[in-house]
Image (cartoon, rainbow, N blue to C red; front, top):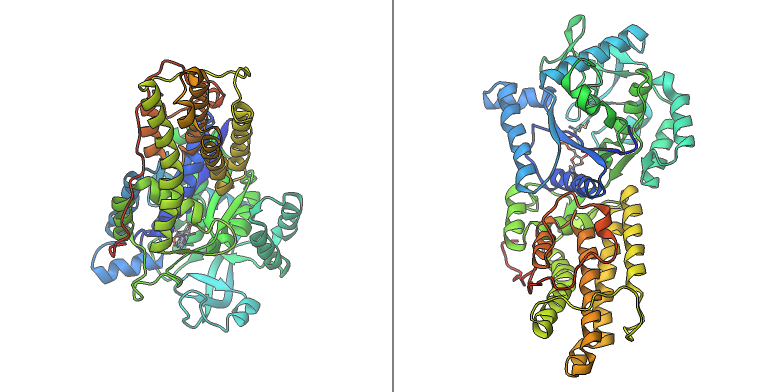
Length: 526
Ligand code: ME8
C-alpha cells in the first residue's frame, strides 16, 4: 500500500437473498469513509460485490427452474442497482463468477497445494447445512448441536476433502493478535476471536463434492472450492494480485493491503482467523484492520419476514422518499450498530433524530444565518474576520475551534470512528447557535453604528458553517452540496484539505437563503 492509498471493502453479498438494510448499512459505512478519504485526496479504492457460488444458490436456482448463473445474474444486478440508488460510490463491483476472479482463485489454491498448505484428507464433523459451515466438537456441544442461525440440527458428516492447514498458523495468529491489537476491532470482538483462537485451531476443509456450482479445484474436477475460500479471495483478486499480467494488477496492486475490511459480526471468524492464515500461507501482507459491526434489529425484535418488521428495499425506499437520502444515511450511520451492541431500527426514533439533528440543528442554523445575511446585508457577505479584535464578538476563537474540529474529524475517520467524526461538525453547529444567542445579531441590526460588528459576527457564523458542512459532506452529500451552492462554493467532489482552513469565504459573495430539511409528518407508511 502506498501511503496515499486507502482500500476499503464490504463483504460480498450472497445472491440467494435480496438486498436489505444490513447490506445497505455496511455499504453506507464504507461509502462515508471512502468519500471522506477522497476529500482528503487519498487514493481510494472502495470495493463491494456479490458472492455467487455455493449450494444455496444452486438449490434456489433448481427450485426456481433456472440455471444458477441466471439466478446469480438477476440478483447480482439488484445488488448493483442499490449502489446507484443510494448514492454509494464504490469504485468496483466484483462478482465471484467473473472469469478474472475464478482464474486467480484457482492459481492461489494451486500455490497452496504446491506449498503443502492445502492437502487431501478425510474429515468427520458437525455440519450446519444452511450455513455450509463445520463446527468443532466443543463448539457443537455449546450450540446444543443446533445451527445458531436456523436452529436446525447439525448433522454428522464425513467427507474426503481438501484441507487448509489452519493449525499450522496457530502461533503466527496469536503473535499477530498480540503485536497488533488493532487487527480486529472493536476490542470486545477481538477478545471473542482471541478466545476461540486459544481453544486451538484445526485444519479446515476447503472443498466440496456434494454440488457443482463453484470454482473447480485445480487438478481435481470432482471437487469445487468451498464458497468461503472463493469469496475471501475477492479482496485480492479485484486488485489482480493472483495474475500480474492483468490490467487490474497494473492499476490496482498498490492498494493492498486493505486499510479496512468492514464486516458483520457473524462472519468475523472467516475474516480474522481463516483469511489472515491463508494470506500468511501465500506470503501476502495482511489487511490493517478487520472491523466487525453488530446487527440491526427492527422495532425491538430480530428482523423477520414473518413478523412484518423486515426492512427490505421497498421499506428503505419509502424512508428515502419521505425523508430524503441524506436523512436515511444519517440515521443509519449515527444510530447504527457500529459498536459491539445491536441497534434498533424504529420509525419513531428515525423521525425524532431527523427532527432533532437535521431539521432543528443543521437545518435551523444554516437557515438562520443565511436569512440574517439576506435581511441585514441584502445577501452580500460582509465583515471578513481575520482575528483582529475591533469588536467584542462573544469571546469564541472560531479559527482555532474549527481547526480543532477538523483534526478531531480526521483522526476519528482514520480510526473508523464514524460517530465521532460526525459529532465534530455537529458540535460546531450547535456552538454557532449558542454564539448567535450570546451575540444577539438581531439587536445589533437595530443600531447603524454596530453594522461592522454585525457583519463580522455573521461572517464567522457562516465560515464556521462552511467548514462544518464540508465535514458533513461525506455523510450528507446531497444537502451539503445544496448548501454549498447557496453560499457560492463550487461543486467539487474532491474538496481539497486547504478548503478546510479558516477564511475560505470571500466578502462580497452572494449568499442565498436556504431551507435544507423540511418538516415531515410521522405517517403510517414508515
Ligand atoms: O455473509 N445488520 O453475505 P451476506 C447489519 N457472502 N448488517 C447486516 C445485517 C443486519 N441485520 N444482516 C446482514 C455473506 N448484514 C457472505 C460474505 S465476504 C468474503 C462473504 C450485513 O449476503 C453484514 O455486513 O449474508 C453482514 O456481514 C453481511 O451483510 C452478510 O451478507
